[in-house]
Image 1 (cartoon, each protein chain N blue to C red):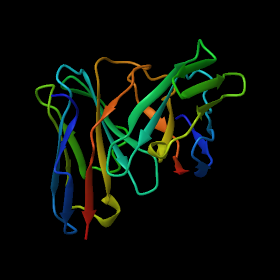
Image 2 (image 1 turned 180 degrees about the horizontal axis):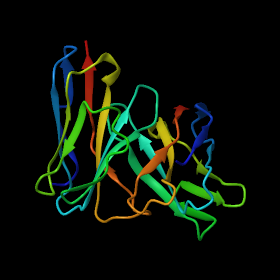
Image 3 (image 1 turned 90 degrees about the horizontal axis):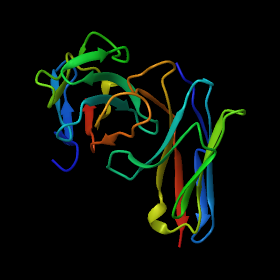
Image 4 (image 1 turned 30 degrees about the horizontal axis):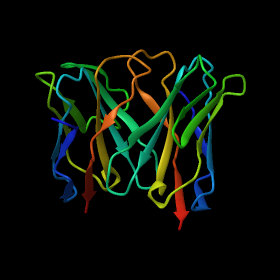
Length: 114
Length: 115
């Protein structure tokens, strides 16, 4: 199956700074890359996703970039706020699957200090 | 409903007990997934339903794990003879359609602790 590596495992930033989380994947056929935010005691929530036919997607303060050649994609959060503190997961689809199964990274604990 | 609902939120089971975890997906969602999330880890796939059909159960860790979705809506994950290594958060997710490229909506999960 797909192998998704995520870095860093923890990230601390000052409020207002930017945060970047990076993921790599192994299957060049993968074509969909979502990012999830998980707050304590809650399930993961989809915050942004990107398909392989574009290199970047933005939604207000968050953006995702994709480099298919290098097989990596990144989450960028600008002007961070304390409420951005959570665990963030990247994911990639199962090789050759049409059913929607995802492989998740191990997560990044983001802490934004006021 | 407005979201994916899971019950119970917390379950403590003695080793060897059977447990049943319930998932109510968003109404009309075709796809339903079960994931297991160990402490400090990302979710790991257990099984997938398309309507009432279980199309992929390759992630179920042993034959003690069984899932069903008999009418294509509510799903139940059953774990027989629970072991300590079964302690985890069990997440249910649903999606409007099938295939890659569609985001899931996750429930808040059931935290299972086996003592």
